[in-house]
Image (cartoon, rainbow, N blue to C red; front, side):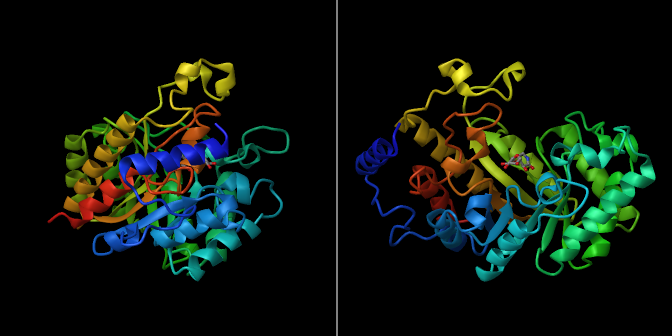
Length: 378
Ligand code: XIL
């Protein structure tokens, strides 16, 4: 669909559902923003992409500034972005991101220090391509963490120190960190981050956070670090959810269980995906090579689905509000649908609708549904 057609389509949708349309990204008068609506409950954040944090998408940035009081970078602090080659760091985009968060007085989150998926191969290998030994890898990890955390000391207020290190059955992922360093790579990462900025909060971040085995494993990790006197401030629950899963019962149980840990709980990458599942053998392909059945909303989202998304978001935010005493922050993985990673993962070129603002930066029915939960008695 062309941009013009999309604009016409979204305008007629606004008329149909009776919403007041505004210029791209402008907030309709009389409606509270997300950060206002939940100001007594938790921070509301969004992940910014590089175009947004570098000023190349001013409308999107303006929307983020109005709605959110915390930001996380989608990419600019990842190892493969900031430290792609052994020599030298690409700090400029991260510098811009951090300066922006300060300018707008937002809680700035650092994502992410140790995560195999975004770590370049050179980190784990010597010049001949053989795996390095434990001491070499520890020293590379320490240098990286000290360089990155140290540079933004006192400015980035919380770090996702380790991401996605526990499998769905609760066991440790057999990633290169674990294979080369061993079990204690996680505690070393937290230790190094604490050395580099003693005042920053430090989090463990992961997905499928409602699985019973993961809940136990995260709890064990927190207790293990605490028993060794290593700082850990919170657990980041990614929140890549669907219309049905996790169920409300699973969400309630999850907050009840994590609530007992006595550390901060954050939803760190919230989005609601509902595109058809893709066979793993097709991961990485573009939709043009695959059946168009995998991209059912390429021409827009039917009202029925728009309402289903709104209902799901209402259920989720009502649950967040019930557990507001345990939840510190809720961060969406993106400002608006057009930027969502679900448009390009696990296959490229699909149209995903997982967030609260549409491709014209207009609030969706899901936005209103979320705002309404803020007005309900607790
Ligand atoms: C996605 C991002 O949107 C990309 O920009 C990034 O390069 C990698 O993948 N879990 C995470 C996020 O912790 O960093 C991922 O983000 C989504 C899954």
